[in-house]
Length: 263
Image 1 (cartoon, rainbow, N blue to C red):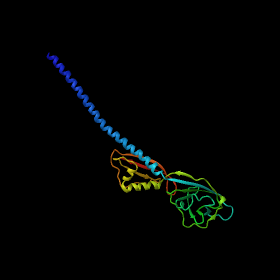
Image 2: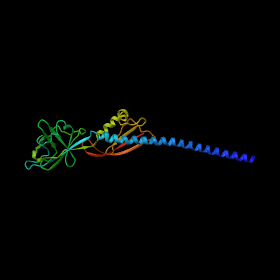
Image 3: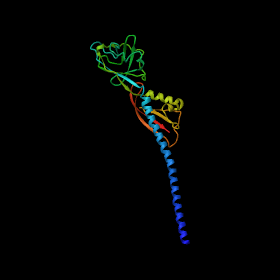
Image 4: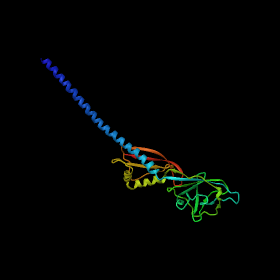
């Protein structure tokens, strides 16, 4: 009888040990899941903020209202008179007043085939424009760029230019392109600097508890960045280096990078 009783006690003890071990194991799993689950959820949240910022900055901010109108004109040289490095022609009679006028004259760039920026003088009272340097006795292809984000290089005095007859100017169609402008990126960095990005967080829908920072690396490797905030020394930092093709104030096409950091 005593022997049977001892065996029964051992069985009950074994069952209790198994149940207790199972409870401890399940509790451990719940603990691990709560830690890892929170970490994974936080990682997903930060990654979403980073992805959203990339869209907001590049598409909804830098590319919005950044259109450029581009017109190509071909100049056929005359066959009489001495060659000059400055030309003049009438804007109205050559049907160019839609892109060269009082409203656009401060936001134009005129370039030759080599991409070199030319000086010009707009004479609104005479409906004329003078462009220099252009050899009046050679074929020339000029591109006119217009955008509110372009700063003109109009000269106050260009004289001694050769008049080009209207029938020697062949006008192309104006095409409109959307570009990222260097000035648009740097102005947003200035806005970030004003309050360390707090207003931009609201504008770009950055979630509460998250912060962001960005810098602009120009084609010459110069880096423009806000100085009002330091990136924290933590593992929970997410970064992206986004290549961008942009136009500078001279309408030059350049390549750089937007560096985005979220924590």
